[in-house]
Length: 223
Image (cartoon, rainbow, N blue to C red; front, side, top):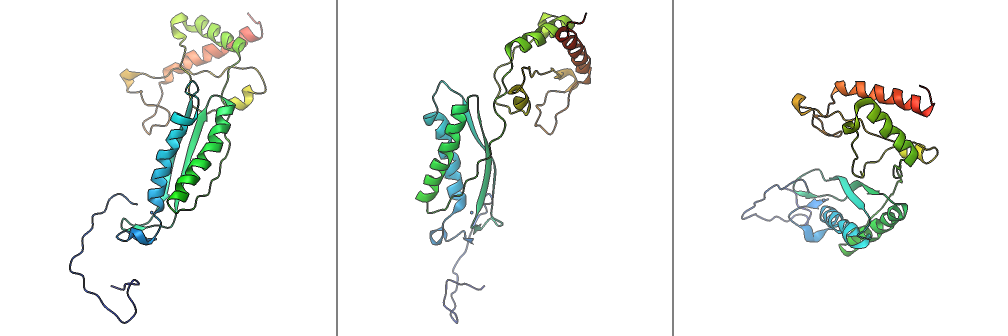
C-alpha cells in the first residue's frame, strides 16, 4: 500500500492492524487525527455548545429553540474529511429573542471552531416571524366553531414553535390561523405532520366547511 508518510523508495512492514467502523465521521486517515483538524469533532462540539444559548443566554421567562437538523461530512468511515456542513433552525416567539439567537450562534460556534483549530463560516436566513392571531378575529372563529359543533369542539391549544407563512399575512391584516382536528385513533390516524405515516381523517372536512360557512356569515353579518 502506498504511504505518503514515508519517504520515497522506503518500506515498512505492519505487525498488526485493526479498526472498527463507527458511524461515518470529518481528509486524513482516521488513525492519525493528530495530523489534521477534525471537522466532525468540531461540529459535534458546536451542536452541544449552541444548546447553552437557550439554557444560559436567553431569559428563562422567554422561549427559544436551537435545532440542528442536518450534518453532512465525509465519504468513508476511516477518513477524516476536510469539510462538514450543518443546517438548522431557530424558533422564538419574540423578535428580540430572534435577534439574540442570530447573534449568539456565530459567536459561540465560531469560538468553538477556533479553539479546535477549525475555520467556521456562517449564513443566517431569516424565515417567518411568529404567527400572532388578532383577538377579535379569534373570537369570531371560536363562536363559529361553537355554533357549528358545540362548545366541546372548541379546544384551546398551547403555544407552538411551528413556523407558518400565514404570519406574514397577519402582520398586514387582522386574522386568525386555526387548526382543524383530524386525528382518529380508531382509524390509526395519529401521526404528526412531518411523519412519513401522516394521514388525516377526511370526515373532519365537513366541520371545516361548516365552520368557514358560519365564519363568512358572521363576518359579513349575513343570516
